Length: 544
Image (cartoon, rainbow, N blue to C red):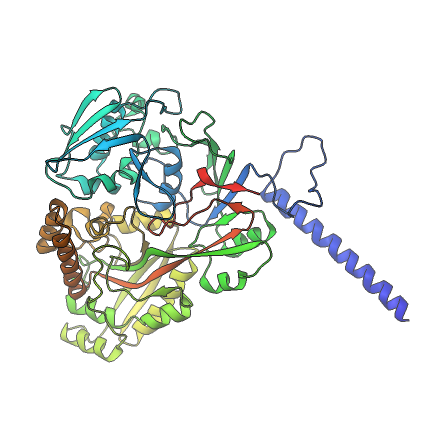
């Protein structure tokens, strides 16, 4: 009897394994079809199971890509791709926040505070083989100014179409309209992406935005191979790249809507790396110690924010906004939602960055104080509000549900509106929202970047001032901060702005995040930059 039982158990076990393998094979076939060449493609005993083709990298995010015009998008999901398709005069690379040469081999800093000279790499070529010239730099910056979206808003009153002087084919002089302290840093951002001037043949009435929305005309380490919207975007290594040619031949940026599906694909080895915002902290904790998976951790400049559109009633009343700030359970968000992977912060300048104000006013979780403030605002009877979040983001969903519960205790009926990322982005940049939960990481490590976007009146909407905040004193201080070269004075300015905003509360900042990225252990060369946490250096990555 014992032998028969043992035999039956072994038979059941064998059948179970076979069924599991069949299920895995079917799943692989549906999601990661691999061409065969008639040879035995089974991994050798010495290979890591599931490591797949070392030339192909599979990355997943659950936030769709709106479009690929580097001068016309405000979406990090687009930036992740356009940074691979295009080059800039200078760039950010590695785990620090210092600028490094890219298209510009060297540059002369201004003695007069306004005139910069850049010397271009003579070997740099666009994907069609035409050289990257000083004329291309002028064309690209002028185009970005015309479009006036994304980072270009920072340069209003700083440069214009007359700021450029072509010295020779590979030398350009840029003369600012007035001193702008972080100018060199800004050229490593999306505004600074250099586009092939041949785009002028397709400009039409929209500066070529429609044409470039699903094409690339860059000089970067990768070229756009294909794009099935909402499903997968494929990058191919630029084999003729003027710099170091990527080791990866293909990068698949996959849109996987369900985080649970992405987790399973990562565990099976069908994905190499996940978007760091994709899995909730509790799922990341479950993955710690899993075979073949590593959770990379790093300090970061990413900040969670809740924008309150002050052009919408009753959010135009500062006491209502202060009441809402007192109705947010910050400790619970950090401890219960983020599981400790964050810390309290009072403004949009992250801890660790120049200009951070550690004395800024923080709002305690105090529902009685919130009720008092609503009564002073004439809103003691309560009201309804709507909060927008991007779908498939468990952290933001959990924060929104927590807010919904606590707001109800002070008479605010909060409706959660979960939207696909492109729809969410359109809603908040057009000012059709009341409240919105988002996240922010700077493209360069200077307080001007964060504060100009979040606080200057010229940045309302598409410029990412999603509170539609308008304070003339803050505008004046921001403009002064740009023009002064005295770092001590600049620090005073940015600390003062943070103090003003903490009183007026156009935004609430629940936490500064610690970065946690799930990755397969066979991935090498992936680095986390504290400011560009969404940036993936595909051009440096290899697979064992």
